Structure formats: C-alpha cells, structure tokens
Image (cartoon, rainbow, N blue to C red; front, side, top):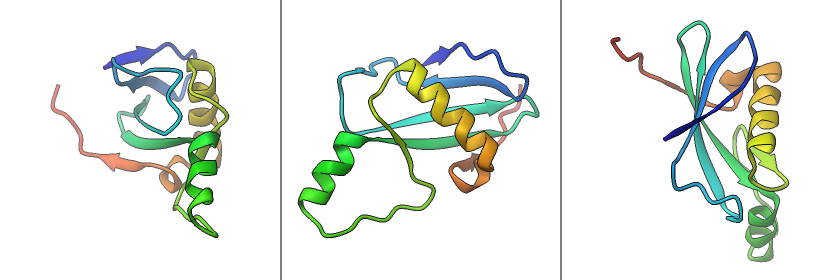
Length: 100
C-alpha cells in the first residue's frame, strides 16, 4: 500500500494499492484513516466502468457510490473529500481499530 499525501485536518491518510494503475478503468478500493483514528474502506468506480456495466444492463445501483472520471491521486483525493463532506459513513465501511 502507498499513501496519498493530503493536507487536511480531518484526514490522516489515504492508502491505495501499490500496484494501482492510473489507466485502469474498473473499481479501486482505498482505506481512509481519519484524524480521530477511525478507518473506512471506500470503493471508487470509474466512469468507464459504469459505462461498461450499463452496456450490459438497463440500470445500476450501488449503495454509497463514489464515481471518478479517471483514477489519479487528484481524483481520489477529491472523492475522499466529497465523501467526508457528505458523511463518510454513507460511503465507506468502518474498519476495526488496530492496536498501535
């Protein structure tokens, strides 16, 4: 995992997989650690992924859907901040605390 540097008082870190390929067009899971110690797993979907899914179906529904135009550190950061503003609990899965 690697960390994306975010200068934000509420976000301590955002972790993405080391093998993350910005040209991929599917889904990407990230882990967001907040300053209060809570961690949330978020799934980001690319716009291209949604297009492919809708080519095969009439509709698509997913709880807490976070969509990005493409995968980049900037887009991931924007999506995480958007989820935080709207209530990250609605978009992510709370992860168990790790003893440090």
